Image 1 (cartoon, rainbow, N blue to C red):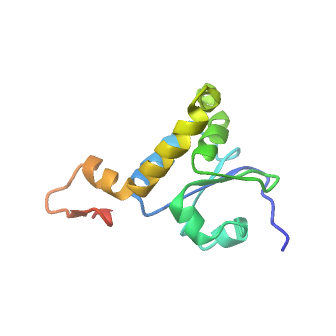
Image 2: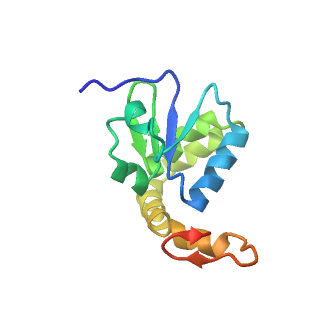
Length: 138
């Protein structure tokens, strides 16, 4: 199957995760939509934009699809996304420091697995709102 290419990188994230949405908002404020597209995994157009990424994969970790079709997932996406964020290109270099190749995947996987619990803990709760470890805060 031919993989459609986009002319700009696409960052795919869990559009139902409060922590992921905060990260998306942070990236959106610091990037140019003409040079980086942000797309929720749940978007109906996601399968056409990135057919090589199964839904399970984009729900497990963020995915960065480069214009040539290369996909960087999880902590590897971080390393490659920082150049598209104004003032943060230097942060991608942190992933090249000694030990980062060992620590980054462990930390990313732990945070990704617990993102809803972390969101429930960190999200300010409105009066009457409910938070659960499964679904974050409503």
